[in-house]
Amino acid sequence: MKKSTFFILGSVIFLTMNTLSAQEFVANYDEEKVPEYTLPDPLVFSNGARVQNKKEWDKRHTEIYKMFENEVYGRSPVWKGKIISTELSSNLNALNGAAIRKEIKLTLKNGKKELSMVMLLYLPKSSTPVPVFLGYNFGGNHSVTEETDISITSSWMRNNPTTGAVDNRASEAGRGKGASSWQVKEIISRGYGLATIYYGDVDPDFDDGFKNGVHGLYKKRPTNSSWGSIAAWAWGLSRAMDYIETNKSIDPERVIVMGHSRLGKTALWAGATDNRFAIVISNNSGCGGAALSKRIFGETVGSINRSFPHWFCDNFNKYNEKEELLPVDQHQLLSLIAPRPVYVASAEEDQWADPKGEFLSCAGASPVYTLLAGKGLPVLEMPAVNSPVVGFIGYHVRTGGHNVTLYDWQQYLDFADLHLGKNKP
Ligand code: GTR
Image (cartoon, rainbow, N blue to C red):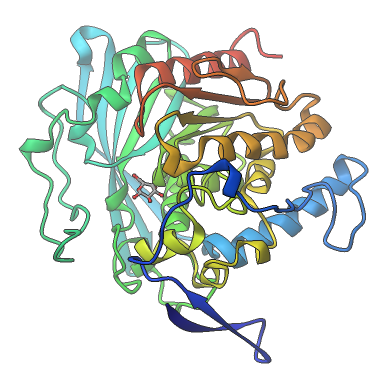
């Protein structure tokens, strides 16, 4: 056990708590051992008053949003800089003639500082602007497709988990390695485009003390509520959206933000912070994503903060092994996206991400969707595997493990057709 002291709420209150070390932590996978917990009601203000209508929801939305900002993800700066786009490559007959493919360098200029990220764009051939899925990739743009001529990112890849050294550059060996998670041909054949960026272009995935990536674009000294990397990555998706709004081939009203795992947490926070995203998709996002924290099932707040101290704001540490004190839970994150459709996908074997907690989170957000969109999640009970349930909230748990599969993509495409296509409700 380690004792930590945290400084909260100005200068008067100190909170001392015991935290487990990584070695002491044992994840709970037993439903019987889930503690009794009370979820904060998204439709009840902190002062106990109930939200009566859509207008009152706007105020409650702000209240919930601020709690997530201060206590979970951290506050991101307002962007006042300039984005310069440069086309690095163009192939008008990619995927054997089925698609147009471009690599576009986006340089974010903030005063004298700048940062570049490269967007890989696949678009179906169309005479009108097309809808796109926007999401970060884990292994570099060259990992997303089997096409062999995509450039390799010069950003550092993740740090070496054993030595801590940042010594693993992207290489040829990673080419096409993530292709099955992206299903570019399927996306294109259904009339959608794909815009993807290597997440490390935006912020490196290790605790670098705010030096590199977008954090380095800003001078501000970190506080306990400064943006962590998830917020930084989400912020980067908004900058990608700024560029998309200038691209005449894409319909900016039909941009679907999607992410897997830590990048699923990122997609949800991006959806909550930027209402230009028409649909939000979370694939196996788990703790700090779609899963309820107060269930303490699989990954917990304490374990995620110990393993990834840079992902959330420092205030989030106050809730290590103290989930009952959290003023919010993740169903309220989903509710911040309402009435825009949100889809949450779990995988049966991915118990670390707590599939049931992800479903219950959808159920907990449903009353907000019912108020704003007329329909949230259409069921009260968790569905069987491979049986999607779809309203303005969509959910499935599929067979298999922590991954993005063709099956997942087929559900996302159907969900996008339903909400953005001709048959939209
Ligand atoms: C795990 C982490 C999860 C999830 C995953 C990933 O190690 O505990 O929260 O985000 O990484 O991003 O692949």
